[in-house]
Figure 1 (cartoon, rainbow, N blue to C red):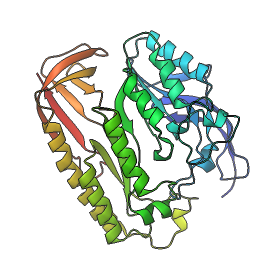
Figure 2 (cartoon, rainbow, N blue to C red):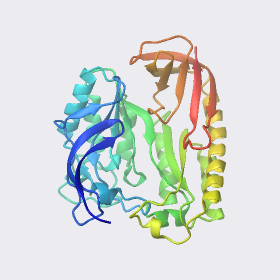
Figure 3 (cartoon, one colour):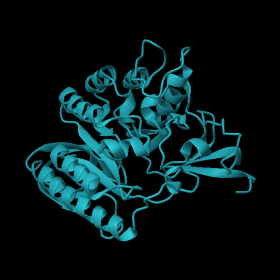
Length: 358
């Protein structure tokens, strides 16, 4: 692949940052740039919701991914930079802060004096962490919630779980892409985790954060995935009953290890596995949504008749239909009157829930 340098706009979940020259080839020089509070930005999100990027890059060697080659090693923003941005956004009337990075749970560990390992749990005794950042955010005045997106299962700790449970401004919503559950598949994907760790973590999250919503994603049709390994994944989905779940069909990413692996799965099999997994999750989602009927929810209004609950991230999760209009960008409380779960075939990777609110 030939190398060429360009000044470019980097699109990060509806936020533009102007980056310096960036080598698009997977070359010997990797990026060191990271946006901070003073970086000019142009927000495309609604006025009441914003994404805040707390780190750039990733240290994990997932075989299906090229982010480390493209974005470089994990680099955390300084806590004071993140906090200054959030204070400014809340002051502008933002009611939802979505924390993002390629690996949100690794935040701050690259700033430690002693190097953190690839499976290092969050430990605020060693330096800045997501825990200390969340506790600082909790102290910011104003009515808002903060949501964690793109966490990695390897770095979760009891301390982080306890912090989320204790901070009422942190949404009871965990986005934790797992990608697969079969032990052999996790190894080929180079996920730096195990089935036993994942199952234990799910138990701890649900026991330690009452009412938590777990969102995850899985990949089907990864090179070498057998019928038996796919059935293992299906069984795990069936038993785990994730509140929010997405399925992606594996696609070959140029420059990744997996793109060169033998045993590439035919598109017909990928499509079949995708549909089977999504149909199973649709049934689970409908059942879970029906259990909400009669309960009262705190909602953030996106449009006069459309809102979202604490359990729903922008763009990918449930939408709540309001029977009466409400002011956009404000929090309201309403009672659930009905629920439905649908999949937009053939291309949607997520289940979209609809709740009727009286």
